[in-house]
Amino acid sequence: MSRTITRLFDNFADAERAVAELERMGIPHRDISLIAGNADKAHDHRGPYDDGHTAGDHAARDAGKGAATGGAIGGVGGLLAGLGLLAIPGLGPIVAAGWLASTLVGAGVGAAAGGAAGGLVGALTHAGESDENAQVYAEGVRRGGTLVSVKVDDSQAAKVESALNSFRAVDAATRGAAYRQSGWSRFDDTAPAYTVEEIEVERSRYTVP
Image (tube, rainbow, N blue to C red; front, side):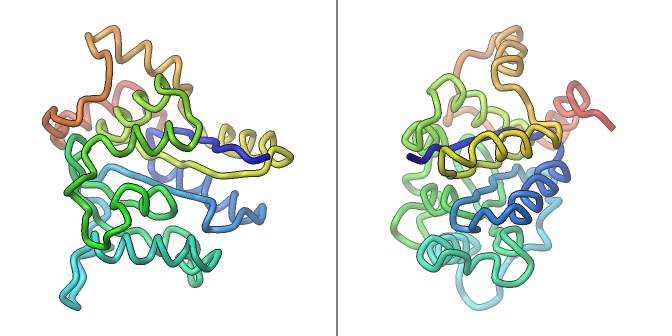
């Protein structure tokens, strides 16, 4: 049996280290996904592309390759080498790689925006995550966080959870409670994306230097 383990990180660097640890443990690239907010343009060096295709085209294509070949995304430099720029309603600009990126853009390459609204919640719940946690995770990305989601065999689950948690992963229940204190209830893909200033304020509440 297999399951999907997902964690939210306030700091991209923590998520990056978590992915590197998963790769070191031998988790195939096809089974790892990363979704990160990019409102501050911190990842713009990963695009745009100059061959006539959109960033969404590349993200979908590369994610699909990784799923099909068992590691094409990270052939050189690991999973993060395959990060592509996307624009998702409700989340704003993001970077994404892996099977979750492929799910977000859909089967049609280049469908990065169309049909992707609210797709992150649906993709996570379809993979086995609870709706409550999926709502928190999508909202976390909207507020500038980074999501790492891993498909693993049950025999590996405990080790993968321990690895992710060791890099300051967010507890979904605790973060959800904090969001609800400010009046939030569910992820709204029609709400405006967070501005850079709003994300900075949000990160200051939780990020540990």
